[in-house]
Length: 297
Image (cartoon, rainbow, N blue to C red):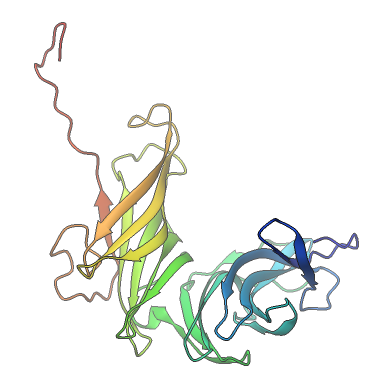
């Protein structure tokens, strides 16, 4: 929602099954700065005990973007704001807050910090954060950050991460899937143990031999556990014009991995790694018969 005075608001609407509006609420930016606005509303999830948790990014502009914080907003079943919580860092630009409710009413959260904050009024674009990683933490049912952990302390996690889906098993192990931007844009699957330590990350890249294409990416969006302890993940692959894809391509993607995140059994025998592993999805070999061919192949 836009108030015609430069501020953008977060807007929540509830409708009945016929599409009739039941209520509508706008939520102002947290900061009173004149250049603060709500950037990307990212997620709305049912909260334990009723209502919803909503995540969003709040931006600050002074010619160039100088800061962006990550927030969780809690509303009751009528959309009335109960609390909001800043979960990022004040010295970094924070992206992609993602929360998921716990049975005790608390929330786990994740976010990434790919850039360093500029001083207010700076005429220089934000600098890349060489220490950018995934942060993982917990918010209380009352909206307080209880703790947060830099997962780069456990394994080498550097890059710009978007967490798109999450799964927690009965033993308390948590799995995050999504996409990372570093040198290449790759999908990933990350395992966190009940002590909140990252145990391993597997990364997935389609067609690594398609090197002449610009802007190629492999992204993962959905994470579903399978009966054998592994996972099925959905996503997409994109390539611009290239020798492999002369007209370019954008294709949906489904991959199946085992309990260690492996496309091929045995890639991670101890189900632990201090350095993320990249697994490649390659083009299946093509054979032409007869070769050379005449009128038929």
